[in-house]
Length: 306
Image 1 (cartoon, helix red, strand yellow):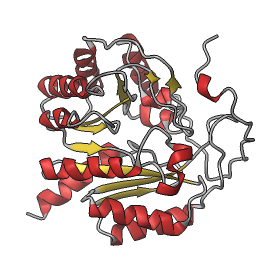
Image 2 (tube, rainbow, N blue to C red; image 1 turned 90 degrees about the vertical axis):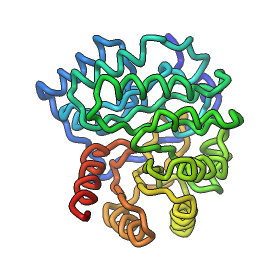
Image 3 (cartoon, one colour; image 1 turned 45 degrees about the horizontal axis):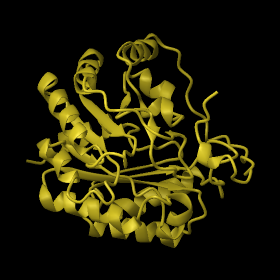
């Protein structure tokens, strides 16, 4: 049997805390769920919904919403919180851009989220592959808005600019946690590099909406969360998601505590007062959770305000 996280085998065991009542995903075995599953499986596609063990998979797939994960299912990083498989990735699939574009068409998506594993093994971190996927998806689905959730392209120079050349509607890169926890939670990443990526994206094309996400429950303080919000606003980030960290296994980073729904509501209100255009803050919020509905609402309100 292949071990999903070989780098975590010698880590200490961190017992998983019992989930409170409000951490309960919706179970739906609808026809639409199986339709989405069939499209994903038939086209041999990878989704972050499956690979990251997302708690919202049944709800989202029942609405035909799937977040596609390109460049394989194996990540070159070993973040302490993440459930995506780590190891040596396979070579890129040249047909993936067409497969994604066709799947988006069959699912009739108005808004699609495309993410990827980290590919530190590639000279450009996979930015050209992102470009190909976005371009092909737009060509096949001219009325579909495209949101990308990218790696940090750390030590890849200006590689990220290739993604922006494809002109996605939303550029998302998750900050994930507060600076004091980076060395333990995201050892392969750098807080200020992630901030700089978001800031430079906005500078290069201010028509692209920028977005970032934060997990809570890892041991951060409230003041640290508010500081991250300020840092993101200083980098001109438009959208923010805040969700509860759920520990995937006893070998992953230990959960410190569960935040209550009221705490999420309070953080959401604070984020809005700081000037984020869209905020999603709840226990089960993930980067692409309700992304299509939120983006649609924003577009609609902008049209009506002109």
